[in-house]
Length: 110
Image (cartoon, rainbow, N blue to C red; front, side):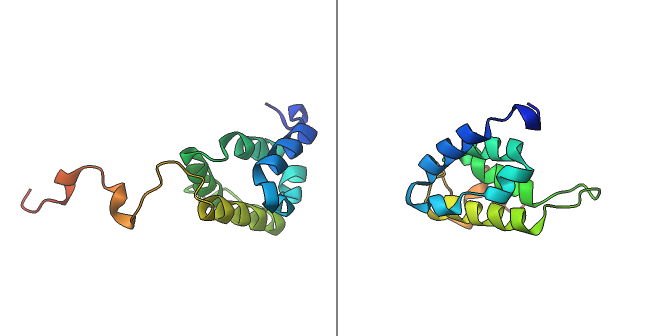
């Protein structure tokens, strides 16, 4: 998908519907500068994968990346917080220790 092939009007309609009463948080700068990223967010909204995608967008292991413009970074942060606060991720961890799926990992004397 190229930036030109993104139907921005459709994305805006779909995402404002998903945001509901929080539609004022619609990411205008993200739409204008990175419509493919907005399309991915709209597709993932409400899923566990959304949290991972936000993490991937806001952190990097590549040193050649410049980061997002400030307005876009702020919108991503707001959307990430909204997604988290509204409990939209299915299967969300109940404690910081829930990431450990292998109980043998924590046993001493191995």
